[in-house]
Each structure stands twice: as structure tokens, then as C-alpha cells.
Length: 459
Image (cartoon, rainbow, N blue to C red):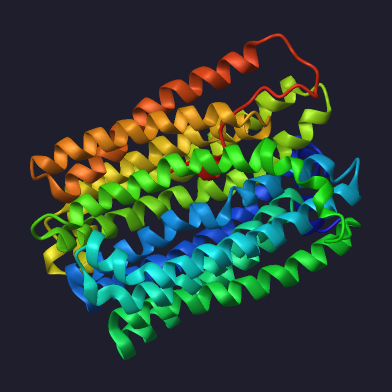
């Protein structure tokens, strides 16, 4: 036996195919591969973009992205998480129904994404002029309407791939989009400044849609799932049971983060402060990106365990995901926090003295990474309306803290601290609820006991 064969045998011995450890490890591996290259490219692109646009221009790009993200909640309608949960749940026992769920999520995402994108295009002038005090951003908002549509469709596609446990395909998709973001954004900025940056994001999202659809078609063929659009009306019940409460949960967080950003940019020197916050948020997003992607591995696994008496297995999956998230975030946090000013200096001289904003943002990402497995568990067991009230509490806490800190002139630092305070409160009640459900007397597998969707987190 060769050394390579011996190594493979040891790996298969520890991670047998089909076991919980094997499924989690293989899914996490491909997630890590895609995340490292994708987020590395995004960070490099953001650093170069910030140096070319400056603090004000980078702040303007941030508010455009934030507005598109907020409206993306309405465009996405919770369909990504819906596809993940129900495709994973029915993949083995009812492949035909899994195919109808994929068809339903695709059609509804196309409709809601198209409608919200059209509304953004029509009301771009009112939004930029009356709300954000930046009438010169109207063309960029209208270009961003296309990004809104493609992102909505991307969410449904990635959700379906997660439900199929096609993590290798998701990794390849993230890899392609990440590698595209660097040249198209930088090239766009060099040619057309801020408008070029938005055009670059639109182009990367459009290509990602094409790539995702190709992967989804191949993975459905491999899994024996036939995507159906004719009988999707029979599955509309899931929109009420899951998509609607998931949407309302998101509707509590994304508009709150956008409202706080709008408060910031309307202050003196607000767009420059928004640029500082955006630079720090790039690292927060990068640090949390991998735990978020691993959540795409964990949710379908937990959803599939709803068909079995899997309480012990659920605990194993949760413990494994917490350990992976800790290994992915804590070492990075230890390295970056002491040299935060130096990291911020990558973006330009005006960013270099604002390392404290980055430190708070990194702490927020680490807390969110630890919180995510509990949110994954609660999402997988499907009683979503409680999540609406949990996220309403998050939004209320965030807005109150942000209002008072911004009123005192804390700027970007105040917004970062508001995120941290809200997630501390959110972690307390989320862990309490998840532990109470796991410790409760087992119910029938048909009895919903859960609450919170991963994509309701404000990242």
C-alpha cells in the first residue's frame, strides 16, 4: 500500500462516508477552500477601491451596498433558507417535492427580485435626494437595481445547493465570484470611479447567477431531483410556514442597520465616517464569512436529522460546528486586534488612526461566529415566528444604542459599538432558547419547535 493510499484509508477510517463527522468535515473543507480565496480577493479589491475612492467615495459605495442589502431582504423573501431547509428535509424521502421546492424558490425569487429592483430604479432619485442627502448618487442606485435582482436569484440558487449538500459546487461558485470581484471592481473604478465599482459588482453577480444555475442543474441530475415548475402552487404553503416569518425576521434587522447608516451619513462628515466603518466592516464580514458558509453545511444536516430521533446527533453537529467556528475566528482575532491601526492603514492615510473601529468590528464577528451554530439549530427546526420577535429585539437594541452614540458624535465607532451591544443581547436569548429546546422532552418529528433563520443575522 502506498503512502497516499494509507493516508486515505486513515481519513476514511476517522471520517467514514455518510457519517455525521464525515458530512460535516467534507462540507466544512470545501467551504473553507471557497471562503479563503473568495474573501481574500474581496478584501484586496476593497483595499484598492478604498485607496482609489478615498474615505468619502468609499462611504458612498458602502451606503449603496447597504441600501441594496436592505432591499435585498424584500427581494429575497427568505427563499434561500426555505430552499435549504425543505430540499434537505425531502431530498431522501420525497425527491419530487424537493424539485418542486427548488422550482418555487426560483420563480418567487425572480418575481420578488424583479419587482423590488424596478421600484429601486423608479424611486432612486427620491431615495438619494430626500433620505441620504446625496442626489449625485442617483445613477449608481439605478445601476445597483440590477445587482439587487441578481443577488435575489443567487440567494435562492445557493439555498437549493445547500439543501442538496453540494458544498463543493458552492465553494467553486464562491471562488469564481471572489476572483471576478477583484479585476472587475478595480477596473471599473479606474475607468468610471464610483459608477464603475457598482458596475463591477453587477457583472460579478450576473456571472455568478449563470454559474450557480449550471451547478444546480448538474447537482439535481446527480441527486435524482427533477426541478418542476408546473406544480409549484401545491407547495405555496411553505411560503407562509417558513418564508414569510423568515422574511419578517430579516425585515427586523436589515432596515435597522440601514436606518443607522442613514443617520450616520446625514451627520457632518458622515460619508467619511461611513467610509471608515465600511473598511472595518470588510474585515468583520471576512472573519464571519467562513462561519456563515459553514452554516450552509450545518443547516441541511440538522434539517435532515428532523426525520430521525437525532437529539444526540444534533448535539454532536452543534459541538463540531462551534469548534470549527472557534478555530476559524479566534486565532485571526488574536493576530489582528493588536495591529488594527496598521491593518486600517492599508486603505489610506485617513484610515490609519481608526483601528479602534476595526477592533470592535472584529469582536462583533467573533461573537456572531460563536452564536451562529445556535441560530443554525433553531432555523433547522422550523418555527420561524418566534424568530421575528427575537430579531425585533435585536433591531430595537441596535437602533437605541446607535441613536445615542451617534448623537454624542461617536461616528463610525458608535455604529460599531451598537452592533456589538445588540449581538451580546441577541446571544443571550438565542442560546437560552436553543438550550431549552435541546433540553426539553422530545416531540414528534412533525411538531415544529424552532425559530431563527441564519440569513436573518445582520452581518
